Length: 111
Length: 116
Image 1 (tube, rainbow over the protein chains, first blue to last red):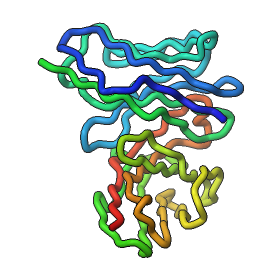
Image 2 (image 1 turned 60 degrees about the vertical axis):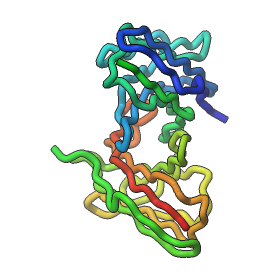
Image 3 (image 1 turned 45 degrees about the vertical axis):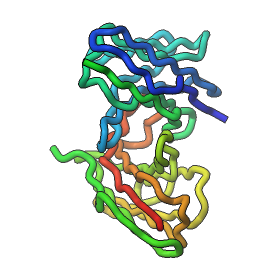
Image 4 (image 1 turned 90 degrees about the horizontal axis):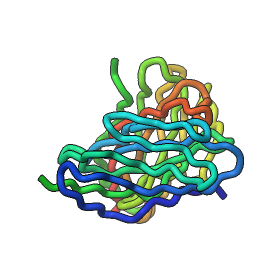
């Protein structure tokens, strides 16, 4: 079945460091891909999305490119801040109407 | 513009009891989806309601049931609670069924259920 695999955390970085969180997927057809972020004690917020191959989603300095050839959607940010500390979830939708999530990657940014 | 709201925020039940969780979608949205998020895991899809009908269901037993009202709000009911039902229950709303096309699902803050 369709699935999402994320790198295990926690990822610990110093402020202003470069961030990459890897995400790969398995899906039939042409899924849409998403990154959601969950801050402590809160629900999920959509960070960015891409609906077709080679699309780049971007928001708040974060970027991810839909790579069909490598079935990947890696999240990147050039300079992280302490306020970026959260859990990041990669997700996809397939031919149905539900979101399929990865297990999440916790990011901790130190001052 | 109110976002997705859920009630209650926290709940403690004992095994065998029944629980009802509630969700009000974001203004203008007509579709509600429910997810279960166990500690340290990603959310798992339970089911989705549109036009007051269950449109899709994940791999959850019949103990999990739901309802959608004419005002688009929704309830999630869980019968015969098990310890393993302890989790954060998230409600998400969207417009129509076009999630596959990238239509954004907006999530509420969740209800944290603890089963003792």
